Length: 299
Image: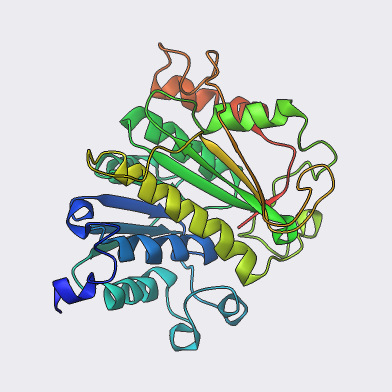
């Protein structure tokens, strides 16, 4: 590998040496998470840890929407994705971990503490709130994303230490009325055969659009630490993006809004000094019920 040649065409916009000391934790190796991993590898990020559930293998129906192809059919997604990342940037140190992030909070907390950014690419509320809680405790930036039903659009949010956390943002969106009339249950894409919450599948291009915004937020977050960066700060903490028109939400295709969602002083995760980990665990169901948005998200 010739490092100078590898980054020759991008060095003018991004010094890969600035990314070498970064450690990104990417939770979820599905269609969205895999693209975030690919793009951040191209930035020159020196360390990436991929987290996925046990037994998540690439199935044939995944291929039409996933960066991995038939050569990886039947393999564990994290193994095949690790090889894909090393094929892009052999210098990147790529680790893998298989776990249930809801049930294995201890090991997950250790991975979060080692990271400079956490990227949440899962598709169910329980995992989102656990990761949110642990990143707030560790003081590590969190970037989350979701694709709405049928790929009509999606969201990307960022939680910086001391600012509104995921629970604050989700609660604010639920109260805003913006998503009134949309589906009221969060679709768990890990169980696509669940008839009660069956979604309309998104196209590859729909998922990729949102994943690329998430990767861009990763880049901006990283470059904000550089004194000589001309990227500028991210103006807000929540991005709403429409792939196609939806009445009351997206007036036209490729529509976007950026919001600055305020921190909730009464938030059970980031707003109540005095709550310890056992207290938060005891209130976990209340957190989810309070913060659920009235919108359908698929991964």
